[in-house]
Amino acid sequence: MARSRLSLRGLALTAVILTGLLTTCAAEPTPPPAPTPATTPRAPGLGYQLAGYGLEDVMTGGRRGSTELTDLPPGAPGELVSSAEVPAPDGMRAWRMIYHSRGPLNEDRLVTGLVVAPAGTSAIPAGGRRLISFGHGTTGINDSCAPSRAEPPLSAVGGVLPLVRAGNVLAVTDYIGLGGPGEHPIYVADTEGRALLDAARAAHSLSDARAGRDVVLWGYSQGGQAALAAGGLAASYAPDLRVHGAAATAPLADLPTSLRLLDRTVPDGVAYVLLAALGLAAADPTIDLNAILTQTGRRLTAVARNQCAVGLLKASQGESTSSVFTADPFTTEPFATGFARQWQQTRLPGPPELVLQGDLDTVIHRSTTDGVVSGLCASGGPVEYHRYGLADHGTILGVSMADLTSWINARFVGTKPPGDICARP
Image 1 (tube, helix red, strand yellow):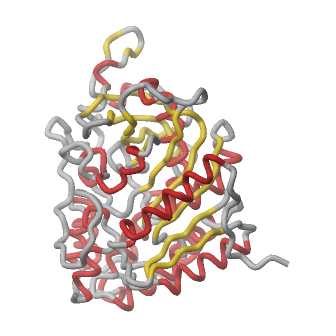
Image 2: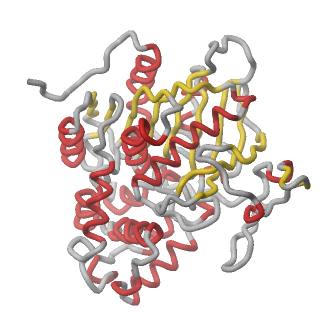
């Protein structure tokens, strides 16, 4: 397969699990999810309307709610604002949800997401069902790219539903600013981690899901960064949750190394560098990204804001950091330090970790993930590491699902100690 097609399928979740796990590199990218028909895009200075998430049923100040998010009062991290049941496969129930989290400046933010649970009430443990909080791969920064906006409602998470069939509740965050109000600080690890933990809290509050407080964190690609960061934040940020582990599939954890390799080795790799720079600017209002953008960079920024990741990748074909930026973001502040900080955030000590990596991955390279595992070991471990010789960035999900499921089950049961690749004195 041509390198450009591999990259187009790369970090974009829409090319991997919209309709289930892909098992061949020959598959073309799936178009990004469309926004729900009743959704009104936000406009500067105006309110943010969001239908289809149950806001109409929320009472505010003694009066019936509306689809206007700006009317809602502040809330505690993980507080469930509203939910609306959506169609689900046989044996499951599913809801779109809105919940509170904390943004880059510790400000209150409203976040959208999904909850999927087994149907019925039989065989529910006394403490509630086991809960897996999932972080998805890169879809883009436009609100229409959020998994919870996809139609049919669960088409963006079809590949992870086997975990629900096994009896678990699945919480899926859209991340801050993706699907909800405000900008999406893409690849900013601590905000992703908080959104993942707060999605678990919100799912626990959704009574019909019957979810407990026992949680395993899991993420793919961008979501791998989120899961590792959430693991390091869990004890201090969400002590009410019992987090048993953090699993990362092909994780975008060492952000500077991954971005440099993408920029050098694939013809649309600069798209990811631009997204990372946009993420830092969304997290810090003092950053003036336009100051280091060329005319081409400004054009691609407009594409990023108005399309999903696949569209940006196509528009970035043949471009480079020198054509998009007037100064190298890898050596120019505050971008260089900002990229490095995200890698540091994923290495905070936390629960047992699992890393899954394909040897043929040209998006998150095996050599980079080898280094990530070494960094996680240096932070204390334990780290279990599985590599798959014939898997790439798309096929790794299907190839590794059995090992992931076994590891998750062992973390919840607690009778089998986690594997550990780290050398111990």
